[in-house]
Image 1 (tube, rainbow, N blue to C red):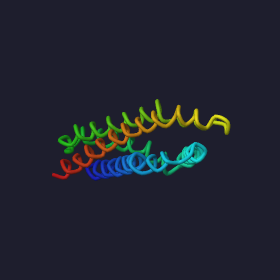
Image 2: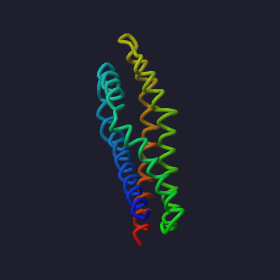
Image 3: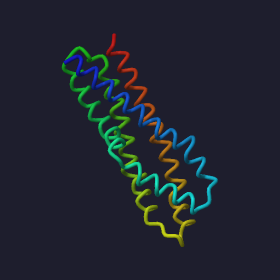
Length: 159
């Protein structure tokens, strides 16, 4: 059972790190690069990204991370991993915050942008960009903090 707890915690930590890295890369590289693009390029790029990102690998990491964190928390609560439990729960809570932001803000904005026609690119971008970028930074910070909490949980569990 201890091995399963450690492996589930390791998997949750790796997933949290990958998720944090994805959102951070959008915050410091992708969106700043697209800021200088014309409206057609911006909308087209974001529409293509929003379609291609919904794939098995992304969904496995995005949804598998909290599942592994829950498993790790349950196993830690039942066994010798109790000292790591607060850090696991903190990492899980921050990941849930990030998922909530994604579901409540970023996905609806993505869906609205998907319907943008060639005649309203400027308006579509105006409705999308600033809000999406702001909330992406918030979810990047939440997922990075969650990753840090799970990293510390690994340290504590290894003692």
